[in-house]
Length: 273
Image 1 (spheres, rainbow, N blue to C red):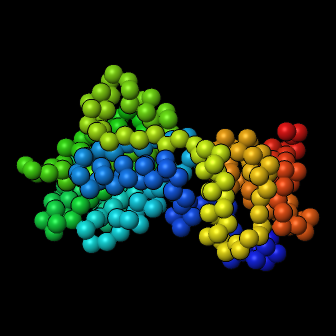
Image 2: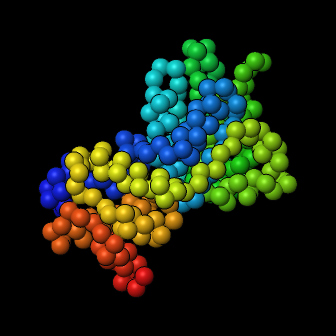
Image 3: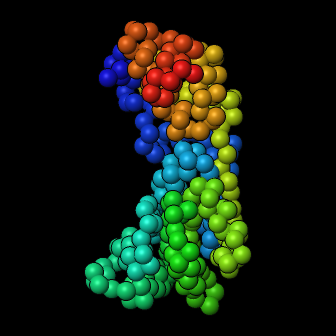
Protein backbone atom coordinates (compact mmCIF):
# COMPACT_ATOMS: atom_id res chain seq x y z
CA UNK A 1 0.00 0.00 0.00
CA UNK A 2 2.73 2.48 0.95
CA UNK A 3 5.46 1.44 -1.52
CA UNK A 4 4.70 4.10 -4.13
CA UNK A 5 4.49 6.86 -1.52
CA UNK A 6 7.95 6.06 -0.16
CA UNK A 7 9.46 5.13 -3.52
CA UNK A 8 10.22 1.57 -2.43
CA UNK A 9 10.47 -1.40 -4.77
CA UNK A 10 9.32 -4.00 -2.23
CA UNK A 11 8.13 -4.16 1.38
CA UNK A 12 11.15 -3.74 3.67
CA UNK A 13 9.78 -5.42 6.77
CA UNK A 14 8.05 -8.57 5.59
CA UNK A 15 8.00 -11.38 8.15
CA UNK A 16 8.97 -14.05 5.61
CA UNK A 17 12.58 -15.33 5.95
CA UNK A 18 14.01 -13.83 2.76
CA UNK A 19 17.81 -14.32 2.78
CA UNK A 20 18.26 -11.22 0.57
CA UNK A 21 17.30 -9.16 3.61
CA UNK A 22 19.62 -10.98 5.99
CA UNK A 23 21.50 -8.47 8.12
CA UNK A 24 24.77 -9.86 9.37
CA UNK A 25 25.12 -8.48 12.84
CA UNK A 26 28.24 -9.74 14.62
CA UNK A 27 26.08 -12.46 16.22
CA UNK A 28 24.40 -13.50 12.98
CA UNK A 29 27.75 -13.65 11.17
CA UNK A 30 29.19 -15.78 13.96
CA UNK A 31 26.17 -18.08 13.91
CA UNK A 32 26.42 -18.45 10.13
CA UNK A 33 30.13 -19.24 10.35
CA UNK A 34 29.47 -21.86 13.04
CA UNK A 35 26.95 -23.55 10.74
CA UNK A 36 29.33 -23.56 7.77
CA UNK A 37 32.23 -24.76 9.89
CA UNK A 38 30.29 -27.66 11.33
CA UNK A 39 29.12 -28.78 7.90
CA UNK A 40 32.36 -28.29 5.97
CA UNK A 41 34.45 -29.95 8.67
CA UNK A 42 32.01 -32.88 8.87
CA UNK A 43 31.37 -32.51 12.58
CA UNK A 44 28.20 -34.60 12.30
CA UNK A 45 25.93 -32.45 14.46
CA UNK A 46 25.47 -28.69 14.67
CA UNK A 47 23.04 -26.97 17.07
CA UNK A 48 21.70 -23.44 16.66
CA UNK A 49 19.29 -21.99 19.20
CA UNK A 50 17.70 -18.58 19.66
CA UNK A 51 14.56 -16.84 20.82
CA UNK A 52 11.42 -16.82 18.67
CA UNK A 53 11.96 -14.34 15.84
CA UNK A 54 15.72 -14.02 16.36
CA UNK A 55 16.48 -14.82 12.72
CA UNK A 56 17.25 -18.56 12.78
CA UNK A 57 15.05 -19.43 9.82
CA UNK A 58 16.47 -16.58 7.73
CA UNK A 59 19.96 -17.88 8.53
CA UNK A 60 18.76 -21.33 7.50
CA UNK A 61 17.63 -20.00 4.11
CA UNK A 62 20.93 -18.22 3.63
CA UNK A 63 22.76 -21.42 4.52
CA UNK A 64 20.77 -23.37 1.93
CA UNK A 65 21.68 -20.75 -0.67
CA UNK A 66 25.35 -21.10 0.31
CA UNK A 67 25.18 -24.88 0.00
CA UNK A 68 23.33 -24.78 -3.31
CA UNK A 69 25.53 -26.48 -5.87
CA UNK A 70 26.90 -29.78 -7.08
CA UNK A 71 28.92 -30.47 -3.92
CA UNK A 72 25.98 -30.62 -1.51
CA UNK A 73 22.61 -32.36 -1.30
CA UNK A 74 20.32 -30.78 1.27
CA UNK A 75 17.09 -31.69 3.02
CA UNK A 76 14.99 -29.35 5.15
CA UNK A 77 12.36 -30.45 7.68
CA UNK A 78 10.25 -27.46 8.72
CA UNK A 79 7.60 -29.26 10.77
CA UNK A 80 9.07 -32.08 12.85
CA UNK A 81 5.80 -32.78 14.69
CA UNK A 82 5.62 -36.29 13.22
CA UNK A 83 5.90 -39.86 14.39
CA UNK A 84 9.10 -41.83 13.83
CA UNK A 85 7.95 -43.49 10.59
CA UNK A 86 6.70 -40.20 9.17
CA UNK A 87 9.94 -38.44 10.05
CA UNK A 88 12.08 -41.02 8.27
CA UNK A 89 9.85 -40.91 5.19
CA UNK A 90 9.94 -37.11 5.26
CA UNK A 91 13.75 -37.09 5.38
CA UNK A 92 13.94 -39.56 2.50
CA UNK A 93 11.44 -37.52 0.49
CA UNK A 94 13.39 -34.29 1.06
CA UNK A 95 16.43 -36.00 -0.42
CA UNK A 96 14.36 -36.86 -3.49
CA UNK A 97 13.65 -40.50 -2.67
CA UNK A 98 10.34 -42.19 -3.31
CA UNK A 99 9.16 -44.42 -0.47
CA UNK A 100 5.88 -46.38 -0.43
CA UNK A 101 3.18 -44.70 1.70
CA UNK A 102 3.18 -47.66 4.08
CA UNK A 103 6.95 -47.91 4.42
CA UNK A 104 8.20 -48.06 8.00
CA UNK A 105 11.24 -46.31 9.41
CA UNK A 106 13.56 -49.25 8.72
CA UNK A 107 12.67 -49.36 5.03
CA UNK A 108 13.04 -45.59 4.72
CA UNK A 109 16.34 -45.73 6.59
CA UNK A 110 17.68 -48.45 4.29
CA UNK A 111 16.73 -46.44 1.20
CA UNK A 112 18.30 -43.33 2.69
CA UNK A 113 21.51 -45.18 3.53
CA UNK A 114 21.84 -46.42 -0.06
CA UNK A 115 21.27 -42.91 -1.36
CA UNK A 116 23.83 -41.38 0.99
CA UNK A 117 26.41 -43.96 -0.09
CA UNK A 118 25.74 -43.00 -3.72
CA UNK A 119 26.21 -39.33 -2.87
CA UNK A 120 29.49 -40.09 -1.09
CA UNK A 121 30.71 -42.03 -4.12
CA UNK A 122 29.99 -38.91 -6.20
CA UNK A 123 31.98 -36.76 -3.78
CA UNK A 124 28.86 -34.97 -2.52
CA UNK A 125 27.99 -34.05 1.06
CA UNK A 126 24.50 -34.64 2.47
CA UNK A 127 23.09 -32.10 4.92
CA UNK A 128 19.85 -32.46 6.89
CA UNK A 129 18.44 -29.32 8.56
CA UNK A 130 15.63 -29.66 11.09
CA UNK A 131 13.96 -26.38 12.01
CA UNK A 132 11.83 -25.98 15.15
CA UNK A 133 13.74 -28.92 16.59
CA UNK A 134 12.46 -28.15 20.10
CA UNK A 135 9.23 -29.83 18.95
CA UNK A 136 10.95 -33.19 18.45
CA UNK A 137 9.87 -35.79 20.98
CA UNK A 138 12.46 -37.84 22.82
CA UNK A 139 11.66 -40.73 20.47
CA UNK A 140 12.31 -38.54 17.43
CA UNK A 141 15.51 -37.17 18.92
CA UNK A 142 16.67 -40.76 19.28
CA UNK A 143 15.82 -41.38 15.62
CA UNK A 144 17.85 -38.34 14.65
CA UNK A 145 20.76 -39.67 16.71
CA UNK A 146 20.52 -42.99 14.87
CA UNK A 147 20.71 -41.12 11.57
CA UNK A 148 24.13 -39.89 12.63
CA UNK A 149 25.26 -43.53 12.73
CA UNK A 150 25.09 -43.69 8.93
CA UNK A 151 28.76 -43.71 8.03
CA UNK A 152 31.57 -45.45 6.21
CA UNK A 153 34.82 -46.47 7.86
CA UNK A 154 36.26 -42.98 7.38
CA UNK A 155 33.41 -40.45 7.19
CA UNK A 156 29.92 -39.50 8.32
CA UNK A 157 27.41 -39.80 5.51
CA UNK A 158 25.07 -37.15 6.91
CA UNK A 159 25.64 -33.76 8.51
CA UNK A 160 22.72 -32.77 10.76
CA UNK A 161 21.76 -29.24 11.82
CA UNK A 162 19.27 -28.83 14.67
CA UNK A 163 17.72 -25.36 14.86
CA UNK A 164 15.30 -24.38 17.59
CA UNK A 165 14.22 -22.21 20.46
CA UNK A 166 16.09 -22.14 23.81
CA UNK A 167 13.91 -25.05 24.99
CA UNK A 168 15.95 -27.28 22.66
CA UNK A 169 19.14 -26.45 24.53
CA UNK A 170 17.42 -27.13 27.86
CA UNK A 171 16.05 -30.47 26.70
CA UNK A 172 19.37 -31.68 25.38
CA UNK A 173 20.88 -31.02 28.81
CA UNK A 174 18.70 -33.73 30.31
CA UNK A 175 20.63 -36.84 31.44
CA UNK A 176 18.67 -39.32 29.30
CA UNK A 177 19.65 -37.43 26.12
CA UNK A 178 23.36 -37.33 26.93
CA UNK A 179 24.24 -39.70 24.05
CA UNK A 180 22.86 -37.19 21.58
CA UNK A 181 24.25 -34.16 23.40
CA UNK A 182 27.75 -35.64 23.40
CA UNK A 183 27.66 -35.90 19.62
CA UNK A 184 26.89 -32.22 19.15
CA UNK A 185 30.31 -30.60 18.98
CA UNK A 186 29.33 -27.29 17.37
CA UNK A 187 26.79 -25.11 19.23
CA UNK A 188 25.73 -21.49 19.02
CA UNK A 189 23.01 -19.45 20.73
CA UNK A 190 21.76 -16.48 18.70
CA UNK A 191 21.12 -13.45 20.89
CA UNK A 192 18.97 -10.37 20.07
CA UNK A 193 20.29 -7.29 18.32
CA UNK A 194 21.87 -4.51 20.34
CA UNK A 195 20.43 -1.02 19.98
CA UNK A 196 23.26 0.01 17.62
CA UNK A 197 22.73 -3.16 15.54
CA UNK A 198 19.00 -2.50 15.39
CA UNK A 199 19.62 0.94 13.85
CA UNK A 200 21.81 -0.61 11.16
CA UNK A 201 19.31 -3.44 10.69
CA UNK A 202 16.46 -1.01 9.92
CA UNK A 203 18.67 1.01 7.56
CA UNK A 204 19.82 -2.17 5.82
CA UNK A 205 16.31 -3.43 5.13
CA UNK A 206 15.20 -0.05 3.85
CA UNK A 207 18.19 0.11 1.51
CA UNK A 208 17.52 -3.40 0.14
CA UNK A 209 13.94 -2.27 -0.54
CA UNK A 210 15.12 0.65 -2.65
CA UNK A 211 15.01 3.51 -0.11
CA UNK A 212 17.12 6.55 -1.04
CA UNK A 213 17.07 8.59 2.13
CA UNK A 214 13.35 8.30 2.74
CA UNK A 215 11.49 7.05 4.61
CA UNK A 216 13.69 7.53 7.66
CA UNK A 217 13.29 6.75 11.33
CA UNK A 218 14.38 9.35 13.85
CA UNK A 219 16.69 8.25 16.66
CA UNK A 220 13.94 8.57 19.31
CA UNK A 221 11.71 6.45 17.06
CA UNK A 222 14.40 3.77 16.79
CA UNK A 223 14.91 3.88 20.55
CA UNK A 224 11.18 3.17 20.98
CA UNK A 225 11.38 0.32 18.46
CA UNK A 226 14.24 -1.16 20.45
CA UNK A 227 12.46 -0.77 23.78
CA UNK A 228 9.42 -2.57 22.41
CA UNK A 229 11.17 -5.31 20.42
CA UNK A 230 14.12 -5.95 22.78
CA UNK A 231 16.18 -6.46 19.63
CA UNK A 232 14.15 -9.41 18.28
CA UNK A 233 14.16 -8.98 14.46
CA UNK A 234 10.63 -10.32 13.95
CA UNK A 235 9.20 -7.76 16.38
CA UNK A 236 11.32 -5.03 14.80
CA UNK A 237 9.82 -5.91 11.42
CA UNK A 238 6.28 -5.92 12.78
CA UNK A 239 6.48 -2.51 14.45
CA UNK A 240 8.45 -0.85 11.62
CA UNK A 241 5.94 -2.06 9.04
CA UNK A 242 3.07 -0.61 11.07
CA UNK A 243 5.01 2.62 11.55
CA UNK A 244 5.51 3.00 7.80
CA UNK A 245 1.81 2.48 7.30
CA UNK A 246 1.12 5.16 9.91
CA UNK A 247 3.53 7.49 8.09
CA UNK A 248 1.69 6.87 4.85
CA UNK A 249 -1.67 7.62 6.50
CA UNK A 250 -0.23 10.92 7.81
CA UNK A 251 1.57 11.60 4.51
CA UNK A 252 5.02 11.96 6.07
CA UNK A 253 8.36 10.37 5.26
CA UNK A 254 9.63 11.10 8.77
CA UNK A 255 8.87 8.25 11.15
CA UNK A 256 9.10 9.72 14.64
CA UNK A 257 8.62 8.60 18.23
CA UNK A 258 4.89 9.32 18.12
CA UNK A 259 4.25 7.28 14.96
CA UNK A 260 6.12 4.30 16.38
CA UNK A 261 3.98 4.59 19.51
CA UNK A 262 0.87 4.52 17.33
CA UNK A 263 2.21 1.41 15.57
CA UNK A 264 2.91 -0.32 18.89
CA UNK A 265 -0.57 0.44 20.20
CA UNK A 266 -2.07 -1.07 17.07
CA UNK A 267 0.05 -4.21 17.40
CA UNK A 268 -0.95 -4.49 21.04
CA UNK A 269 -4.63 -4.12 20.31
CA UNK A 270 -4.81 -0.43 21.25
CA UNK A 271 -3.26 -0.97 24.69
CA UNK A 272 -1.48 2.18 25.90
CA UNK A 273 2.33 1.83 26.04
